[in-house]
Image: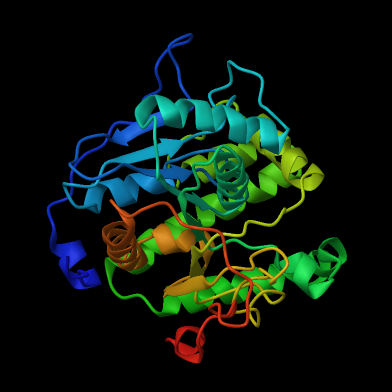
Length: 332
């Protein structure tokens, strides 16, 4: 199918989606955000917050024939113990994925920290002889690639870098989109700051953030701490299959000069397809950037749905190069 434009995606009637969780013990990690459609389902893994509300904006705009499922973290609703071991998390997600689609090849993607979980899921699926078509949304091992010490650097530069990134995003919008972006940025930064300080989600700081948006789930902070522990204790292992990287145009200082966000030939020996998205990280899900994201997702699904499972990379001189082409890197 012909790739839609962001303008065409934005002009579509937006469907309503319901994210209310099922009660225990029926609750699952895999949420059928938009289960109807004739194509193989697209599975997306949550980011560092453990939530899938980012994907709501995608589901509202996504084409009718593409089913969408989202993995949300265990414990996010406050009535289960969060998990803090990334391979265990990935294995649990695979079990539920196979209940929806027993056999591959699967269309699997992850955003932010979810890209790490999806990477580990892909490795486990490949070990079972069922490698998926893999999509990483604005995530990569860029700290390893730079050899940087992120804690000290972030303490010194993060407030200025954050303000600059938000300004670049906000100044590129017009009209009501500016207000929508400002509310999203305010809410996320307040919640991020409160999470770093381990503040009570019912405290004053969180109440200020809630005035600009929805109330976070009860288990938000505990889940985020557990996911941070899982990320800190886990290390990328090689995945010798081709995959696609959706890369935000605005990057943190340590990652902005890395076309592959730190995916080295040792970690990703196969060719990496790079697609550039407007905005910075979580704000690629905010109007109007989300329309470009949906257009790219639909194009990716059309190119991979129904295709055979990817094959391991043939590391011979005749094989395709690891790095993206100059046109991919320079694409505006």
